[in-house]
Image (cartoon, rainbow, N blue to C red; front, side, top):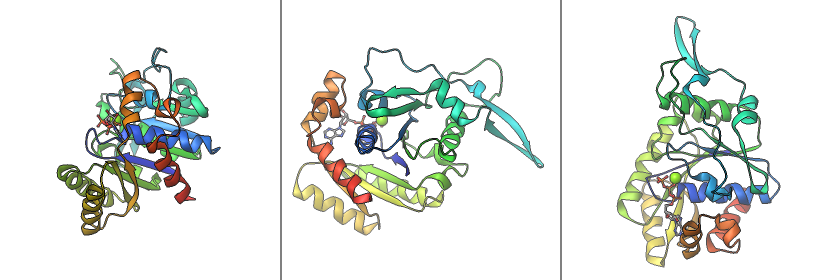
Length: 253
Ligand SMILES: Nc1ncnc2c1ncn2[C@@H]1O[C@H](COP(=O)(O)OP(=O)(O)OP(=O)(O)O)[C@@H](O)[C@H]1O
Ligand SMILES: [Mg+2]
């Protein structure tokens, strides 16, 4: 299954993406985690040692301009398998990580902006059959889901928090995702502390017709793991957030 995780800044996209990857991988899935954020930090949530050197940086050179009938378009030069081989990183539980969100601007090659490069790389990943499961941690916009990328996403999850601006942003994003042709859009409610919060989220999501896939509780262990720079799975795999994600994954089967 290929899923994209979206939502407003700071709602928990990376924490949720990384935890989904680890839980899926522990269930035997071959998982590719794609970090599409210009400030990549999925590696820590996946459990990659923060003192290890980071991935060899992808550059805008990876893109070329090709003629397409009367017009032209950008495309990735290398087959995706080769990109993964060259740039991918191994993470615990056999998850593979590819950071695409922060390409270096090359002096030569296509004169395209980094947004184009990220979008084309995500497209190339999702269109490939390299891994059965792919999870894309997006930046806080849907910019990268354009150019038909949405066709290759089975589901997009809007992460939201129990406060009005976050709910409202999730609603807007969900509408945009539908416009981009993503058929299945659902919410992941995160950092839920009380019944009242859960109820407020339910009421809002019902009003805008956004199904809630899972309610993830506020979990102090997430902050504690973050402080140490380790994955929640390695900090305490019995944590509330892990339990919630596990039951969410089970509900998908
Ligand atoms: N369920 C949770 N319980 C407690 N804290 C959480 C939970 N989920 C995420 N957090 C905390 O919220 C903060 C933001 O999380 P995260 O970095 O995953 O969000 P993000 O949406 O990826 O942010 P950005 O938009 O900057 O990429 C972090 O400090 C993280 O520890
Ligand atoms: Mg993030």
